[in-house]
Image 1 (spheres, rainbow, N blue to C red):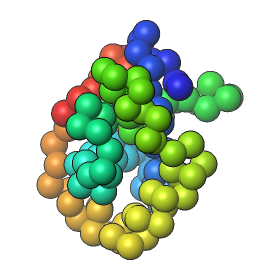
Image 2 (cartoon, rainbow, N blue to C red; image 1 turned 135 degrees about the vertical axis):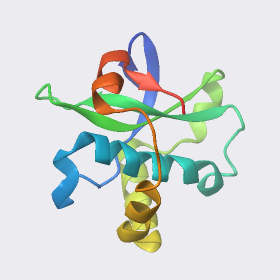
Image 3 (cartoon, rainbow, N blue to C red; image 1 turned 90 degrees about the horizontal axis):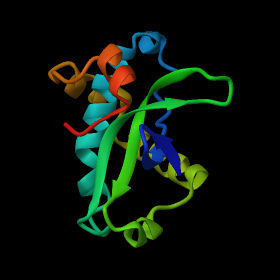
Length: 126
């Protein structure tokens, strides 16, 4: 569990940062939002209490960047969520099936929170 502003999240850190434009965190947030919007359908067998947010995430070096957070008001419901590595692999395969270009196309039409604001507040439920 990753704690952001006193709230716990499981993290989805999709493999989007390998893309050349990924140093633009505002653009990365739009990509993440395109992915986040599809997650309830992808994980339709998960409990309805599970929510997906855009979050400020950080690595062990102190670098901060946007990711997707998973939470629930019922902590027991989070037990269905796979561990970080398995979830990463699952999402990576799923994104490959969809196609990063399709996600980018969807993202280009999305207006959402910008990195400066997400970084300041910690998490955001669109």
